[in-house]
Image (tube, rainbow, N blue to C red; front, side):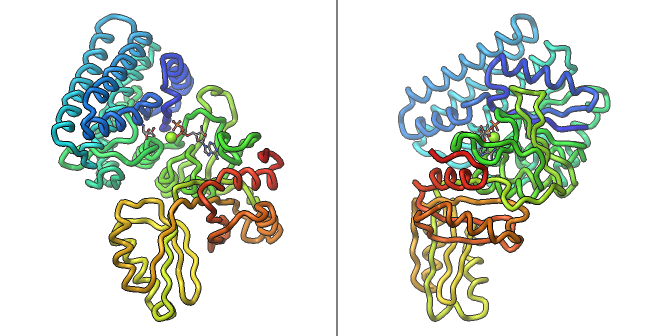
Length: 452
Ligand code: ADP
Ligand code: ASP
Ligand code: MG
């Protein structure tokens, strides 16, 4: 059994969905379970229309909803044509859009958006794409069954970033997916969304369909998890930032996880954990070039000092300065405890005897965090920073690589620098607008292309 996930561009229009069907037809002997994202751009549009409605721009919100309705109906028509199946899909799409229009009206009356209502709306993209893809698969003679992912992917109630409940997911997968697979059918599920045990819709966070695929893969003990996207695999850098990014054919789980968490959007950062737990290889393939080699992510891959470079903006640095406290036993633990209690995760840390600097990229609870931190000493917040990470399993043992990295960035201002204890990543905190230039300089130094 394999789990194959198709991202937004891989199901972006009728032609892309046909390519996806052909890929699955070629894999039927491997008993695929298919996870699909929303049609490209849909989740952004849904969120924008919810925000507009809540801000009192109901007309603009409804216009956006109607444009999405037309786009989905047109894609379905082009793929499925006419007939009973086509009528069913059109009815399902229309029903979801009627519900969406009602929700927009309700939000405009309320005048605010809660994380819970935002999840209800942003999960609709996958509820729309899955029936369209399922009907298209049937047109391609694939014996397909549509399964509501929310019945399988059980989560807690942390709206916007829900925590999956692994045992409940495994039990639901045994009940709702395995019998279909055994009977030779291909289950199709929407990614990104889940629901609480009470049945309230949740989401795993933006880009979460990769994570859904990994969770289903782990629950089914699949032999592989395939992530089908719009690039040839994991590359040495984001191809939208550098020219000449090269394919990485084989990479270790921990390297891929570091790249994902420092900005390589090709994989949602949580995708790797469920795969590692079960030792399931993850592959990244290009749905536009299905015969490509792709990237294989496993626990063993040759170690290189530098495998790839990732970067992300919108990072904030929190500095706590306290000559009194920080040398004392337990001070760091107490500081981290503040972040943990406010569910704010810390990416990079550096310390000295009298100060500690930490980076975060989520400011939802930051005011409360900062208020509590003030009891430790002086607290400063710096916004508009970014992180660039060099990742490679052999980095810790390679002083030339580190020297080369520092030399490559020239006189760019570095706010923090940290080599992870396992020596697989070197992270640099720079001004937000320097993230891309630094990624290019480093790619030029290590891979020979990228700088202008
Ligand atoms: P999908 O909709 O298929 O999930 P995403 O847009 O989420 O696709 O992820 C694919 C994109 O990730 C690529 O188009 C590319 O711009 C970006 N990306 C960032 N870093 C990397 C990297 N190291 N390797 C490959 N792609 C990357
Ligand atoms: N459709 C969701 C998003 O755009 C999930 C995904 O594509 O992975 O964030
Ligand atoms: Mg994605």
